Length: 399
View 1 (cartoon, rainbow, N blue to C red):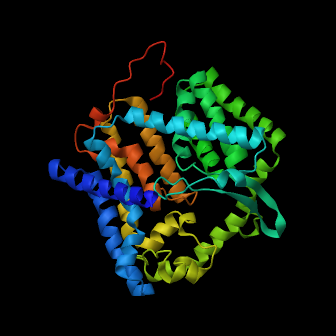
View 2 (cartoon, helix red, strand yellow):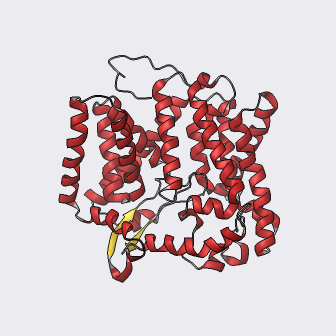
View 3 (cartoon, rainbow, N blue to C red):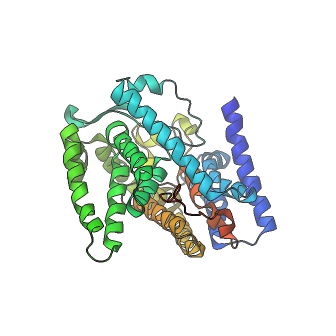
């Protein structure tokens, strides 16, 4: 009951804050596209789901209520919440989760299923994830038992500490970075986070000019790290290599995604402009799974899911929102925060287009609110970013 109250209270605060904000301040391009995403898209998506599947319009609207969490950023704007403080708090939580998981599962040998049984999910900040045996076709064990609860925001800290270690170095950055990497590789066992780290690493390397000691180390150290990781777990390489085999892959999730794309593609072609909308899990006791099977999840399909639910119209909203956010980063005076936001945008775009993970789907929208809320404003963006005064105590502080 309490979690339900918190859920609806957070949604109410977000929407009310949005209304208060636009009544007091001038709209920005970002705010306009957020308005289209939060209000216009659910309307035409609900009409489409009614037209195609006969789902009640109100139920369709309710199934997209999680999109409203992107407007939580306007609440942070109204209370003048400090951006540096928020990122620091997210990092502290993630480091705690990673450290606790490593000690409990890798050191003490506690069964992840036992830990997961104590977790309470509320669908507000995406604590989900969970644990389970990830077996492939023919009984091939691809990732084994893994634990990914409470890691919805781990991408943020992963990119943060990747950049801070490359840019500033120091134990203050390297130690938490190694903690999170160990968690991702051996506990979470996620492939998308590691692929994202590699992508950011390569982009940062390419942007460096000239030949220096640092650049040479950036070539040698990853090779040494990969050899060291394989010495502990030889299956790490196989996790990535097998997904390149397409329909011949031994990985169940890869095969499931291929099947899901094939199932939804005819609907996309027939409803290319506005999509088919979103089905509530309560609709016919399963929503999309009632029509396409228990293994069908739109959240696994990235840009394909966006085309399916909102068609070209939603794709335009996505593109405009990403572009307007990127342009807004030009107005940030702090170069470290500007760099961080741009890499986060690049990372989320790569997740959407390449790794089949849409951060703007469902409850994940709150990540956008936390990461980019200073960019929602037309003016005074830097008033939410306190000045970081360098000293011997914080010279390795990235943000």
